[in-house]
Image 1: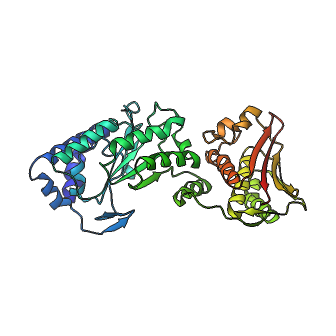
Image 2: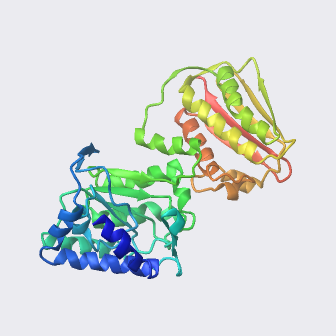
Image 3: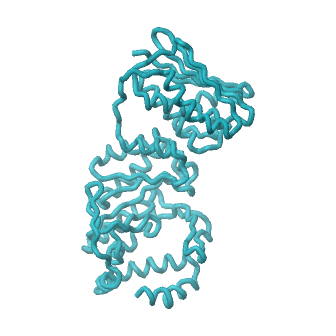
Length: 396
């Protein structure tokens, strides 16, 4: 069958526009699922040997699944199992139906044996998908392998209403899937990747778990996030962690943070200086989280400085509290922008001169880590006068 496809069927398919043939194949598979005998024939030709995998309480007959993007309308649900897949991830689907980007939007890269698409999250909407899935179940053609659904945010929904948008689709489709994927990585939905912010994701996941805490949830993030940003998102999988209350030597924390960021500063031609006052002392808390908070502030500042820029990390304190101050001589920003720099929906473009999308995660996370210790964080800035960011931590 493989030779027939490569030498006979594939050349015929390639005579047609890639999106046109994509849709025709889906319609053909949908029709085949309804015709007696054809699903069994497909299984005989393409059915895979069992290579069972257990994950998140689910049993997969094999680890190779159909990714989201192929079947956005649940048009051919019974056939994916017959074609050898160990699971099928349907969608992406959004609360509201979407037509997607203008055509052409799907392109063959023949030399690379690849397909490039910028479909724009076109889909019939959550309610239409639910109706299609109930139809397959009513016809008693529900597959034995796990079914997942990829959830996206509707393009028309503001970011601040994202959690409710995801929850509507989740509520509409629960009971019709074995797992769900929260998609916050599509480049085709404006500003969607800002939902990779840990606080924003936390709100989305808590909202979905309030609807149904039993169904497994996975998160789809962009592949080009920095290592630090990926670590931030992965922190969500740990749940609401307990902040340790160990003695934390702030001189050691500041030195370690400065050492970590020094190569990045040097690469940008930024002079990073460290000044730890004898009154810095210790606080009680989680050394890893405090260090991460300091590093987020340093990274944000470095990203806004050009060659010759100067950055100072200063630590001091008194009997009741300690201060960690990050200051620079960069271009600064308005105080109004500075007041929103730690907001979870603030982007690097809206709060400062930096261009790294991961910075939209860093400052809100720094605030979260500091406040978990009962501390405060603030920024003072004016255009042309640099920035000054201060972390205040109680001793106890």
